[in-house]
Image (cartoon, rainbow, N blue to C red):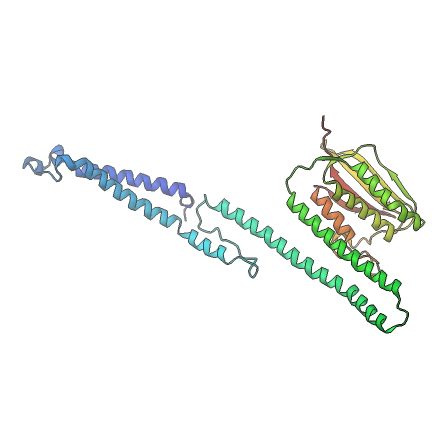
Length: 348
């Protein structure tokens, strides 16, 4: 098809030009023949009587215009029926189906592209939700099975091992809590996408998170050092940012070694932008280099023998991405996790 015919606007313009030409021709044809010196005019014969000539021209023009516009619009929009049939088959059983833009008018294609984009995002969310449910069921299966066996044995033993049962219950409860927390974080990222969060002091939030971890660090004979500026303004949701720092500190406490350091600063980039940097480090060997970004995926552990469930860093990544930032594990002899967030402009 010629490029100009891909436009519904061009087709209608061409149709109107043709209608105008037909109307002009009809006007010349329907005028009394005596005005053109025809033979019939000399005989006193007219095709249409004088009072009805204007009405006849208008009627003929209207009929031709209606018929032509009807034909052009029907021809131009005939592919929309096929597009509607393609849209009708999109669903959970066929999430990859899309609406074809082939032969659609140029004016309609942006709408179809936007609909296809929305369907892509919904399909990704649907796939992620299915994977999340499957992974959660798989991770919950083992601790629940172990707990069930312990409870069955407790029925037969005179002195049940209640400490082991209590530990299994705590493990299941922690896993369920992390799953719910991760689901809430994912929902918050989608719900607040594009929304402007209020400025908050990340330094204060980080100190509060560190204060909550201090008793656990002391119990494990680990030192926790905090070096943060007085104010580190970012735009965000305080509860989510608190959970982000807390998960990083818990991860360093459970899987790391030696002193834990929580540091932060503002850095100006080469293009003049300002970003807040938060780093949590310890003296442990860190994450294997071959894992890379994969360690932030759900249920991915740095070590198969780890006591955790592989959800802490996934929650961190979800919060960071929901606040327009990035998170990386820095290369080096010790474990360092760095978060970069955009700095909020100071109000007033």
